Length: 96
Image 1: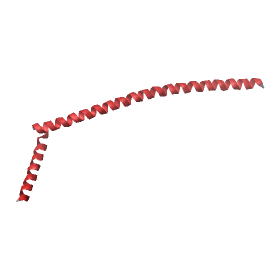
Image 2 (image 1 turned 45 degrees about the vertical axis):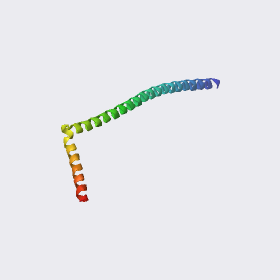
Image 3 (image 1 turned 180 degrees about the horizontal axis):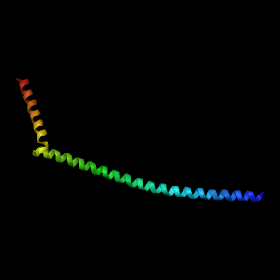
Image 4 (image 1 turned 120 degrees about the vertical axis):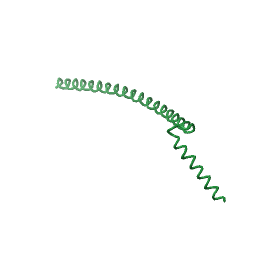
């Protein structure tokens, strides 16, 4: 009776050791993946900041181009000026 009990204990010890080793492997992989995820999150934040900077520069350049009469924004600038002139004319006509 003692022999099967000893074998059962050894088998359980072997299985437990195997599970512990697998658990350690899984934990190591998880830690590696967490490190990769953290690195990617930092990359995303950096890229978002760069995107905001580029968008602001683009907006500034569009405004400067509109003021300088660039081809792309010349029409929009003319419409804005014409609208302002119509608004001023409307105000003058209401005053008379």
